[in-house]
Image 1 (tube, one colour):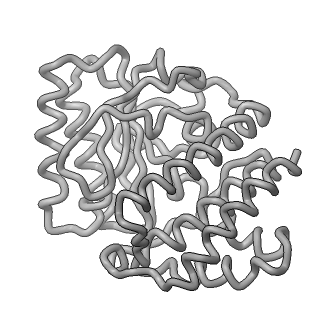
Image 2 (spheres, helix red, strand yellow):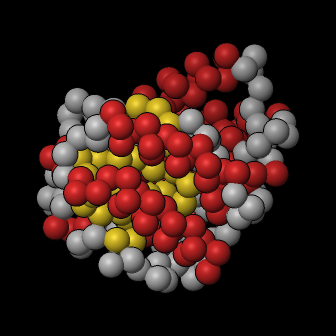
Length: 269
C-alpha cells in the first residue's frame, strides 16, 4: 500500500507516490518494495536535499524491465517539479541487499538530476544498508528491517576507513581532470562528507552531513571550526553553486582538512 505522506513536503510526496506506483507497475510480481534512505531517513533533510531511494526486487531486473525503468527515469527530470529533478537511487535484488557485499557489485542506478541510468556500485555499501534498515521510510512494501540483516559497527567503521582513502584518491584524480578547478558546491560537500564519515567512526551510527558538521564543531580540533562552519553556512541552494568556482583559500583549507580527517580516522575507535 502506498505511503501517502512519507515526508513533510506535499510536492515531494506526489513525486514519490508516482515513483513507487510506476516501478510497481513495471516490475509487477518482481516488485518487493520502494524506500527512502539518506537524509530523509536519518534526519535533517530540507528543500536542498537529494531524494535518495532504494527499490527492492525479488529477483534480478529483466532486460524488458530495465528498458522500461530507463524510460521512466528519463522522464522524471523533465517534470515541472523541482523534487523530480533530484531523485537518486538504486535497484537491489533481495539477495544482494540482505548483507554487505564485499565485491560491491553494480546495481541499476540513477544519479541526482540525470536522465540516464547506469550500472553503479554507488549505493552498494554498508552505510546505505544501515540507514535503510534502521531508518528507511517505506513508500510501498514491507518494513525495510525485514530485508536487511543487522549491519555491525565494525562493518560500518571498516567500510568508512576504506572509503575515506578511496575518496581522497578519487578526488585528486577528479580535480586533476578538471585542471585543478573546484566548484562552489563541491568544496563544502567534501568538507561535510568527511565530517559525516568521522562522525560515523566516532558514534558507530550513520547521520546526515548536517549532523556530522554540527558534531565536528565541538568534537574536532578547534583550528577546523572556521572550515566546517563555512561549509555549514554554504549548504543552502547547492544547485545554484554547481557551476560557480570555489574560493581559492577555501580549496586550500579543504585539502588540509581532508589530510587531517584521514589522520583523525586512525585515532577513532
